[in-house]
Image (cartoon, rainbow, N blue to C red):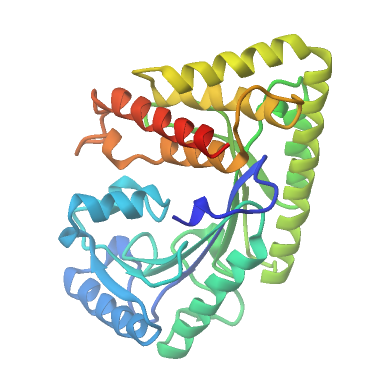
Amino acid sequence: MWYEKPGKDTDVVLSSKVTIVRNIKGFSFPAKMSDADRENAMGMIRQAGGNMGFNFIRCDEMDDTAKEDVFDQYYCKYNFLNSEQKTAFLLGKKEGLGVLLGDKEHISIVSFVSGDDILSAYKSAEEVAENFEKEMEIAYSDKLGFLTSDIRYVGTGLSISFLVSLPGIEKTAGALAILSKRAEKYDWQIRPILQSDGNKEAGMFEIKSIATLGVSESDMVSRAQKVIADAVKLERSCRTNIYKKKTLIVEDQFYRSYALLRYARKIEATEVLNLLGWLRFGLDNIKESEVDLDWDTINMLTHKVRRDYTAVDSRGRKNAASAGIRADKIRKALKKDNERG
């Protein structure tokens, strides 16, 4: 999967994401489209995508294994895969790049890169967007730019976000407010990530652009690079300061957390993310650590715990058996990591 590849600043930044949305001129937005128009629009997008080398896949024709694959790679939400309305994907050979058809906009291009590399993610998505613009007439206003159903995306149709782990900032009084103010200067926001049951994911945040109207694509990418650089610098500083002031506590929590993850037979996702947060504190700060662990493993576990299609049923409720399955997968991953070390 794309997130298993090495990336920059992965001790803090788990992924960089770019979304570019486009709509076809002459059609209503998806929420108000007739079934006939939805089919016609999908046919046009399918043909254009085929010319780019993408494969067309209808969500209502996907089996659970295929749905699990696209969900676990962050391409879409659970509801998109199981919608009563006609939805579909365009997927190609490039990992981390896909196109959603029939979501809130006619065309939603999503591009992911492991770690901090928003420029690469943007270039991949923009290339696809430009090809669609050549293949069909896109809804556009000389005054406003690209037209979308969501006012926040009018203009460039571009959204940029980062998935970050900030246990140091979260545990440092006033640090989150400082980072939020810095982000606001660039018209960005930082918000904690909530699970489907409303529980906050320990230390996990999304840093995201707010609006695109009146801002160029190059300016948005430049702002993204500045915002994430501030976040990485502050988080590393907070982790180091906490470790220096509370060395024994951090080391104790580091080893306790590793032991629970390594040997637990049943564990909930919320607890896993909290324990992984302590591993993030200690991995670079504890010298001569007694465990063999690296950032690739920590991030891989974080992604797999956060995105698990099998952990919920058809109604989006928790699967009672998932806690045991989750613990087994984590044990195997950590055992494999130790064997490599």
